[in-house]
Image (cartoon, rainbow, N blue to C red; front, top):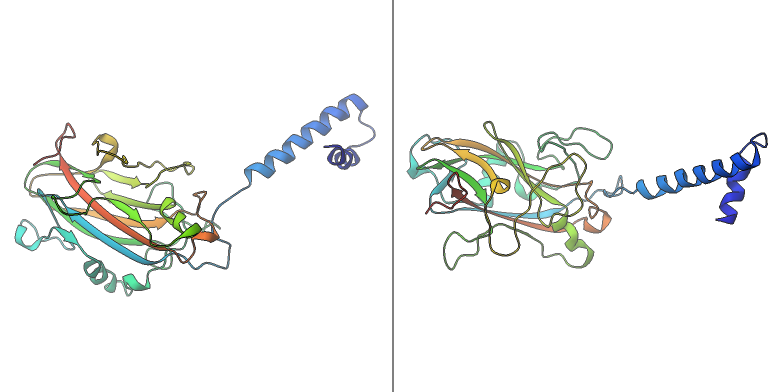
Length: 270
């Protein structure tokens, strides 16, 4: 610190008494070091955005749930048990884009609805920013819908997980991914796989790595019996996450979402 103190000492007026000047030197040094340690921000390097490409999505329902990309009323035969990439593509084509053209450049949000880039500019969905699509859930009885890591039936592997085939430092992309679910009735819930250091202003939940435990924190939204409920699903990589840096550019991201219905005590409905 001797050389550093000499530099700071030159910045301090000779008119300041020596004892007070020493205190001032220490104070300036602490402030400078503090700014050095708190100014670290992840994000990709500005102007070198390549984003995350090759996004793969799979969404499955447990036995008591069905889903559709449109509101079919109470005609259960028109709803399905899965949402495929092709179904998401059909939705995106109505918005003049496609899943293969989707690139996830880093954005951030506090509420899961309004997204901004590193400069604070508001970003629109499905335009080199974040993926957004709508679907309709329906059930034959009242229930709370939860994310689950469990498979819909024996022999399947369709529980919730966020994966990558990228290796090395690119594999960190799974740690800065986010998925949220919004309904008019229950607001927005943000799922953060491998949750680590929290992003300022963002409330998220993670799923257990072992046996699935359902609780109020894993609830997404409520369904009334035979009442289609529109849910908006958004997928993004959060620029404020400590691992969202240049290393994860052009990584591959796989998002598999499994849903289950539970009663008011968070017990799965069979």
